[in-house]
Image (cartoon, rainbow, N blue to C red):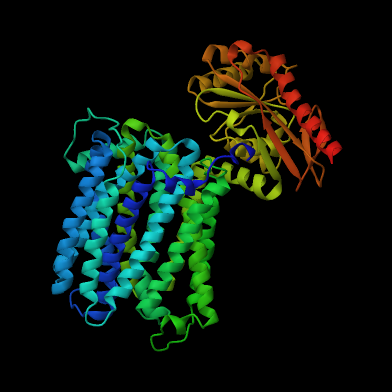
Length: 633
């Protein structure tokens, strides 16, 4: 998008104090969590024989213990993050991590399984306290155009930390004779580095300092969930993220058993699978900013969900029928072509999960009220924990019933497809943005000029020149937020597109001869702008010559709404039927479409005729610039 090419990308945030110390604090915390947990899991799976904790269940038990505090204490931690200055809370959490890792070091040195299980629970508490602060911090320090990139960096950093933590944990615990001692040293050292990074995190003022803490976790958990439900799109996005953690927990918890019993690999092969998975998540998370053009693009979510199911299903077929052999090293494992398919499926599945999760997190952060944003994130953590506990119990029950790990992966991938269809029909905005995303990236070469003129917040009307049905969806792709469309009624009769417009709750432009529909349309447009929404009016579906357009254009003065003229034009190519000006006309596929947004106009400057003239003028100026460019060659 032309309007963003001069702005730095997400990696520039790593040079800024408002982001870099926070990034390294959460990076080291996530790395330490996973260094500790994976070393402990590998020790129970490969090295120790504990009668009351069989190797096949070790990963599930450790995972369940780690997420139990999220259920018990997330509500309280969300209140603390809203009430207290966030940097001081971050430093307290890092001090707690040092104490927990000191106890874990003692557990590794003495091979005290009960103490180590207790430390797993306490590290879960450490992460429970940090979670709401982590996601409430970003919107305080990043703009709307930075929030997707910032979340992508955090998500990438988290999974790279998971990767490095698991690698370090797996390699250190495997050292003959001295493995537990080196794990103990690494855990304490990483906690100390995290505390040093936290010292440079800038101050983040409390968003609700007068909040009275409710220390009852049950009633506060219920209150947080009710608070999250006030915005239905936010709440359903919370459910979508929680499902992603359900999905991911099944794979992450079962990697050691999958590597040993299905792929017949040693501890290093289990680490390799985590490398592939973490790199995939990181690439998918970082790709979100580029694919979204630095806006919050929730159209990526369905794309991610499709990939999660497709590659999860293929992983089942790729891992079935592998010959039983002695445990292989990494060098032996990667020489088999069949294993490359397994790694490709894991990597692409993880990449899809990154595309799925980052836009949802950004959407929740932007649409939650700042005064209780941390409590919304706490509600998300509660739901995440509940979903992961259910996934651990479900996977454990399937293992106990005799299902293989690949069969568990297959069941999860199929269930993901069902859940995805349900979520996207329940929240049409995801599906609509996905269609708009496909059109603007694959069907057309879509360029935007003046995209910053489309307001990211506040009441506004977008006025667009004569346009095809698919261009209505392209305009949605250029907008940083949802919009209601006032369009030609004939668009509703088009196959598939008509269904999408109904799903988008588009408004058919009525004629004055239908007084009831005419009044209902005006009332709906007035209420939308009163609520600070975005309305798009097309000159062909209610042009300046029609009374409805002139009537709608009187609303901005009453609602203090801006008006933004927008022009769309396209070069020639294969054709697609469009409707306009009373006749069927042609629309090109696989060609370049350009959107030009002019400066926003104040209500006092407006007339319907002036807005129509400005919109036409945008197109004329664009054509003139192209002619001048051709003559200059």
